[in-house]
Amino acid sequence: MRQGVTMRVGELAKRAGVSVRTLHHYDAIGLLMPSAHSETGYRLYSGDDVGRLQQIRSLRQLGFSLPHIREFLSRPEGAPQEIIALHLARLREQIALQQTLCDRLERIAQTLVATGENTVEAIFDALEAMSRLDTYYTDEQRAYLAQRREIVGEERIREVEREWPELMAEVAAEMDKGTDPADPVVQGLAARWMALVAEFTGGDASIQRSLTTMYANEKPQDIHPSLDPRMGEYGAYIHKAMAARTE
Image (cartoon, rainbow, N blue to C red; front, side):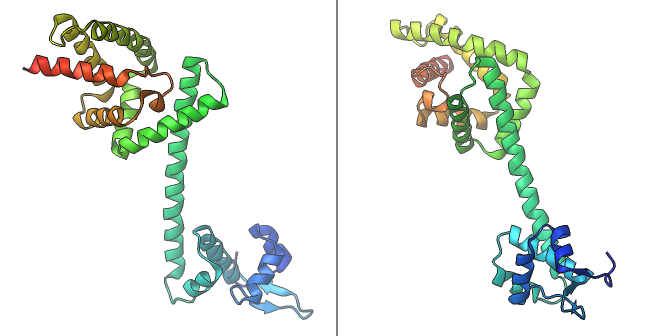
């Protein structure tokens, strides 16, 4: 719009997506006053006024109060560029948050397809599990795990999801019999266990430590309803087997 072009309050409200009442309020408090009035008293807004309205709306979306916006806009040169920079930074944060949510929902969808569960409760369980993951893994670790998931592939993931319960059952059987962790049978189970973990962590030691910390602090079923309640016991048994191998 050329700076000399003017429009009435109703037209500005319609094109800017605000109410006439809002523009009247901005005028009343001295936040956005029209540059001119017609002979019949109508408010007439210029291109500069439209630019100021854009700045006001940007600052409102950033959470500024109207008094703070008036103070901010009273600053000398440079304010428009600063406002745009602030708004862009906030939008990028929101985009990142939306992408994170999108990634979570995609994983939920994959889980529901794999398990056949489609209840609201299952979705809440998945979201809660993801929140717990966020507690123990850094942004970099989660990004790396997402890459590993792509590398491993969904077909292999489905295979491992079937392998884990079988492995857990074998570990439980030996543990309940009191088999020494140094026994070759348990050593073989430990090797399979660590191989599966390494396949998904890529052998990253920091991620494996985060995984261990999570299982040490959380109940398995709080991490995910499908996990065996004795998962922590199995993990401790396997770690004894790994320690025995090292010795």
